[in-house]
Image 1 (cartoon, rainbow, N blue to C red):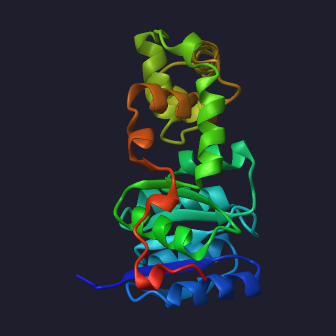
Image 2: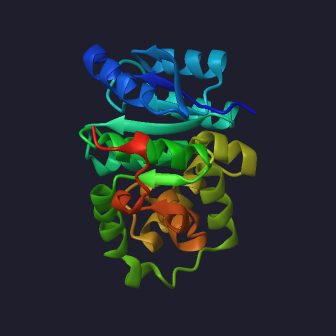
Amino acid sequence: MSPFIRIGIADDHPMLREGVANTLRKRADLQVVEQGSNAQDAMDIAQKERPDVMLMDVNMPGDVFAAVRFISTQLSDVRVLMLTVSESEDDAFLALEAGARGYVLKGVSGPELVLAIRTVAKGESYITPEFANKLLSNIKKHEAETRKFDLTHREEEVIREVSKGLTNREVADKLLISEKTVKHHMGCVMQKLNARNRVEAVTALRHYREREAIGHLHIGAAKAPMDAEAAPD
């Protein structure tokens, strides 16, 4: 087993990317293995180098969310951590639904980024504390209304397949029902979960049924132990 946490970085801003790499190289247990500038580079690095953590920006050339989904499903030993300026809830939900283990906003301190990487490398989840509170607050706005939702067996089947990334047509073919019926059931699911779209429906279902993401969510980087190498930059 490697003594290092091996890291790949994909970001289309060279100066920022190199700045992140330099920050990480100061830590004895972190090793930057390769860098890229787009979604395809991220997939190539993940396949070639198999880093423990793949740092990716949300806004860079290529289909970033498809790249996240590919890495998280086809290369399960590579954990994706988003590092981005985007505070869009939709971007966060799409990234996490695609399989990202964390979502960190650019501008975080060196120690917090290191904490996020170490946390994700262990298989847990990490979201920038203030942004996590914002996401949780918006989800909890609807908690009282959705706490007692009751999905039918068919609705459960449909949302389970949708959560795997299947399109309505693919779900219909798999369950041997019409695409129109799939759309009807998804409409019912979204209404019961008070969700605006499919991503929110999947996210809400995971939130209320499993509680796994919240149970592993690390909020409050200030509580992390500050070793000599994790001192503020």
